[in-house]
Length: 392
Image (cartoon, rainbow, N blue to C red; front, side, top):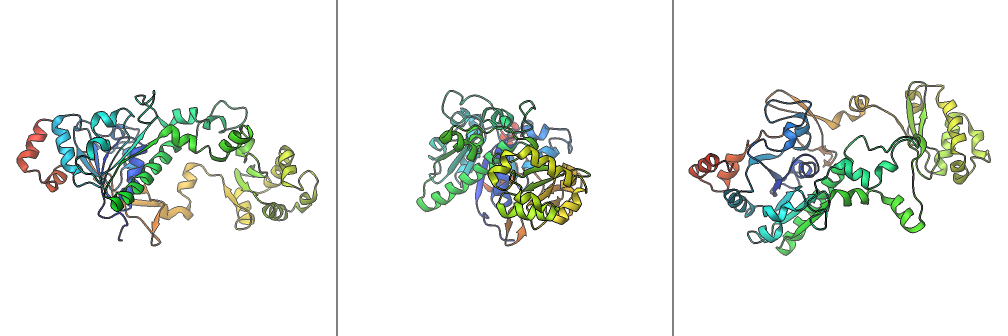
């Protein structure tokens, strides 16, 4: 497959989740992503359990680093900075997800790297941004969910504050990092000049509050939690109990409401004054839930999926095992070669020309150090000296 980012070189000083997630997309789309890691231990994700793949490797690490190259380099040392600068001279972009105050200190911003390569695009993903009173604060996904209001709209109304089950702020921030990088590359190729791009976890999280944010900002309406993971303003758009589990139904439009009650054999509900309009259904959501539960409880989830599928928006509520074993999603599971044997990974959701993007296992720590430096013109003697000094 010819990949769209082939020939693009990206250096990334990154660790753990958000940054690596974003650059993995770029790598899967064909960019050469050279992951810069500390010589001792590398990315902290390598030591994140509970499942390890030998020394300095884990399933957690493999999750975020497919298709990359690994270069060990101490970028805090003078010798390490000199190596970085030689590599930047041939790079299209440099990304990082360091704490906000660190890019300038480490010389990873455009003020430092633009002097070496005016075309280089510098992309920063931090917790709270590179400016302001919290630039030096560390931060993680769950903290952003707390502060951006996510935990106030997640879960049942009478539950304690509840976070998403997954690190969605990390993932969306990584996606924004990839978007910023691509935007910068397009601009730099047109103008011959790069610049800094920033995305902060908290900013990304707050942006995801989306239409509830506009409801509050313009109408002072505060969205809270709804029972059954229901939509904040449309009913029925929620989970319902079935004979063996749960199903999620989204009758977001009037036509779907009519199709739903017809398929369920309760067409009379369409003319019931309590449910005849969208507003009425919302006002009587508790009553409608009780009635529809009584219907859905008569058959298992698979039955209702067969009855409603393709007519009314519907999905079974699966646990993670059921979701990953779902035969409909088989092409979202890939297998790559790993020194410890075949490794099953997730495919990239983007298709190019109708095909899934190719994957290869995440690299061993420093696996590409010698090759990358050799390609940059370092002699064997220079590489040996850098290794002896602990720079690589």
